[in-house]
Image 1 (cartoon, helix red, strand yellow):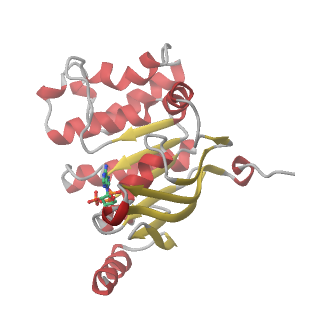
Image 2 (cartoon, helix red, strand yellow):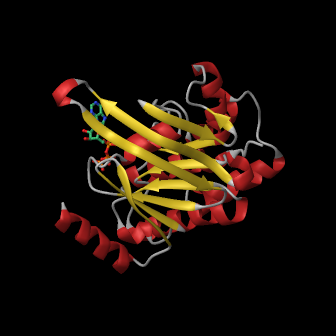
Length: 253
Ligand SMILES: Nc1ncnc2c1ncn2[C@@H]1O[C@H](COP(=O)(O)OP(=O)(O)OP(=O)(O)O)[C@@H](O)[C@H]1O
C-alpha cells in the first residue's frame, strides 16, 4: 500500500530536492538533496545565512519555481510536473503568500486587496470568512484604513494588508518571506502572534523565512539551511538559543 503524505499529517513535502542555477564551472547549487515535510497546523521558521537557499526552497515548495531534481508534494498531489494551469488553481486555493515586496494592487483599496483571492477564485467570502477577515483587519490595526489605497499607507501598514490577504481565505499553507522585516517591534509581535494563532486555531501551516531570532522564537519548529542543505531541524527555541546557534554557524563558515 502506498502511503500518501496527507496520511502522515503532512501538508507539503519535498524529497531529494536539488536546484542548480547555470551550467559548467559557474553553476550554483542553491539546494542540495533537501528532504522535508511540513506538518498540518505547524508554524515553521526557515533560517540560514544569505544565499543558503531559503527563498529557493520556499518558491519550489509553493510551486512558483521548479526543481532540477527531486519531487514536490502539496497535500497528496505531486506538483513536480503539474501543468501551469492546474498549478495556478491549486496555489490559489491552498497557498497564501506574504512577499517582501507586498504585491498589493495600487488601484484597489485595502478591503478590495484583501478580498482579491476570493475575486480571483470567482466567489464571495462566506459569512464565517467575512467574520475572520474583519477580525484580521481589526487585529492588524487596519479597520480604520479599509478605504485607503496602498500609496496612502505606510510600509508597515502595506505589509499588514499583505498578511491579511494571505490569511483571508484560510489557505492550508502560508509562506511568508521576512513578514516582520518592515514593522516596529510591537506590530511585529502582533503579526507573529497572528501567524501563531492561524496555525494553532485554524490548523494552517505557516512557513516563515526570517533572519530575526526573536521572530523565529515564535515558531513551533526552526529549520536552518547552509549551502543548500538543512543542517538543523529543532523544535521551539528561545531567541538566545537561536542566536548562539547562528553565531556558531557563522564561526564555522
Ligand atoms: N535566478 C537565479 N540565478 C542564478 N543564481 C540564483 C538565482 N536565484 C538564486 N540564486 C543563487 O542561489 C543561491 C540561493 O539563493 P536564495 O535566494 O535561495 O538564498 P536565501 O537564503 O534566500 O538568501 P537571502 O537571505 O539573501 O534572501 C544563492 O547563491 C543565489 O545567488
